[in-house]
Length: 137
Ligand code: CMP
Image 1 (cartoon, rainbow, N blue to C red):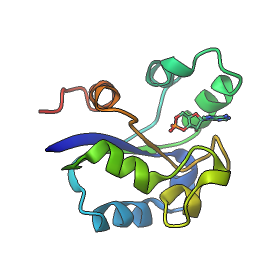
Image 2 (cartoon, helix red, strand yellow):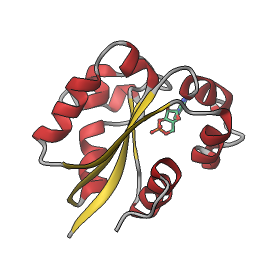
Image 3 (spheres, protein in one colour):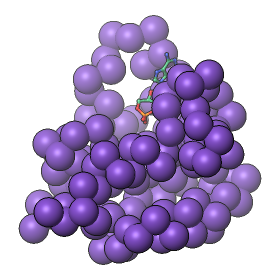
């Protein structure tokens, strides 16, 4: 079944002008671009988006990083979109990243990791609603 997911191109990737290459990598894996938005996370939106990480050691650093510059959000559609995009994005742990992934190429650390991809269909729905303001059909 074709379904939808969310990709965020984070402030470090935009600052280093990697957004175009990241979008090309996504398109080359047959994702269809359904919506796109450039935004700057506020503290409030970042806190809501990353609610599940509240209290973790890296939480304040993560919020400061996400609010440090513009982010590009992409609403993407493909068969098995969530797992397919997670595969293309690569692992959170730098040591486990495969060479052909977005994070292997563009991440600068465990927090400044260039991109975010929703980790389940339920989270994709919630995150798309938070960022784009509507429920994906
Ligand atoms: P993301 O996929 O956006 O989801 C949560 C984010 O928290 C993650 O990418 C990283 O930016 C950050 N993160 C996750 N784990 C750690 C960690 N152990 N130390 C620092 N930052 C982390």
